[in-house]
Length: 81
Image (cartoon, rainbow, N blue to C red; front, side):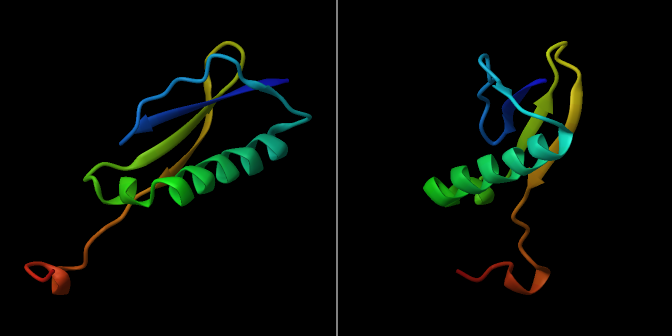
């Protein structure tokens, strides 16, 4: 089945090619890997005030699941640099 790994939130980048994967489990692992690679290359995305989402859709563009990464400052850190 073909899955599409669309970036949303802090980054908007629709996946127009997709990947042919064996099953939903493989797509879940690929989504986590995709998010990890993006964060490795651009770690500041987590702190832009909006979550980073990898929305995985099927060939009909129905959302199957979403990986969400969000950085949240604790109240104790407010006002500190």
